[in-house]
Length: 116
Length: 111
View 1 (cartoon, rainbow over the protein chains, first blue to last red):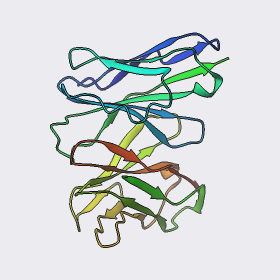
View 2 (cartoon, chains in turn brown, cyan):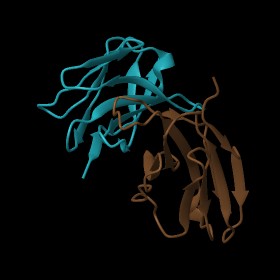
View 3 (cartoon, rainbow over the protein chains, first blue to last red):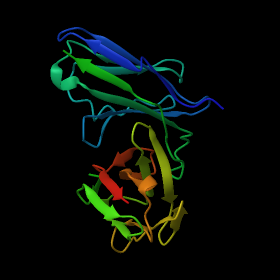
View 4 (tube, one colour):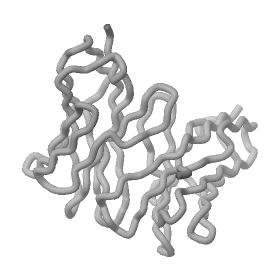
């Protein structure tokens, strides 16, 4: 079946511009996560959606970052007024959720963002 | 808060050597524990998991045992291959579905 997809795969933008990154989770998965992976670094948690609950935004690094999830499916991560330190690979993952901790995450291929 | 700590890399081993990558965690409740692997140029994928104390996860010759008494989930493999070269991430998932990753350990296996 189809896995998690992300678009675009690569994005180059100028400092100060806004960008939108898209994630299509696996159909039926209620949990959706965004992470950031900087070069040579681990995964930095950004935000987590679970069903219709309020998202856990505790990982968003600044108010320039926001995310929404429409209809419990597709999610968009928006970065306003991009800075060079925002350059990273942004990963999306989904999980069946249902508050069952044994379910693993399925990761998308990521969007590589470069801010010049 | 919940956290995962794993040994710093990079780790370089010769083929057929024994591998241990240490992982310890701090969490409330009863998390599930995972090892994910990221091969060069590829996305993250699940390697193995354990959902309760004393469970052993295994896959592709890798093993890890969920040790609640030491809050550890160390990854081991008896004989590594060049194809095992990758970055390995330890992670925990809480009962309310939040997932925390360790910083990753880069492994290079040389012939």
